[in-house]
Image (cartoon, rainbow, N blue to C red):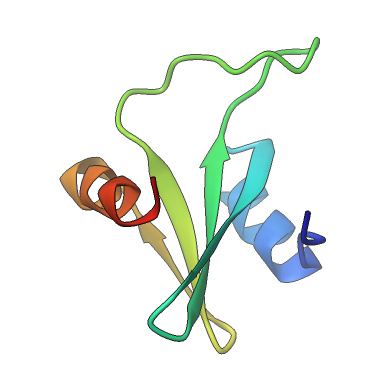
Length: 75
C-alpha cells in the first residue's frame, strides 16, 4: 500500500480524523479515505464516507453525498 504523505496526515488531523487509507488515483488526483478509529484501531461509525483529495498539493475534503458518489467510482 502507498505511504501516506505528511501533508495528508496533517490535513486529516486538522479535520478530526485519525484513520487514513490510500483509496486511489482518479482524473490526475490522489484520494485518501479518512475516518475515526478508537484506541484499539477499530473504525467508529461516522456516517457518509469522507475523502481528502490531493490535486498536486492542493487539498480538499470530499464528504456527504459527494463522498458517497466518489465511492461508486472506486468500488
